[in-house]
Length: 98
Image 1 (cartoon, rainbow, N blue to C red):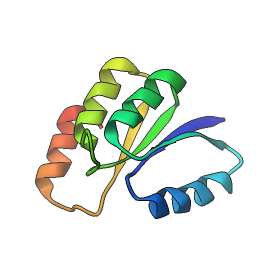
Image 2: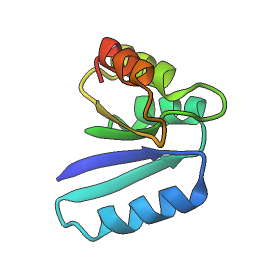
Image 3: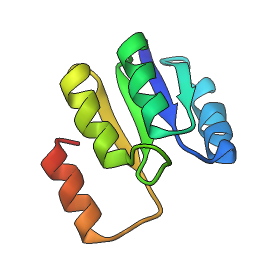
Image 4: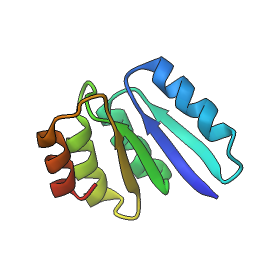
């Protein structure tokens, strides 16, 4: 079973993602964060297989969260979801290892 942490500052987005994930038998949602710092702390504590992450959040932005997660929990895969389509964001995420 794949364990997942969701991180997004919009409750409605987390609620929708939670519904999708809970419908899948192979996924288990183990935590939710509403800002970047909380996301890093949850990943350190829970060590999920996957972190689903918003790009723009209060505290730490998604790219900084991805950097910190890569150092603190390297086995956790990071998936960034965003409404921002700029190439700069994509390139920076790739440089981060996402």
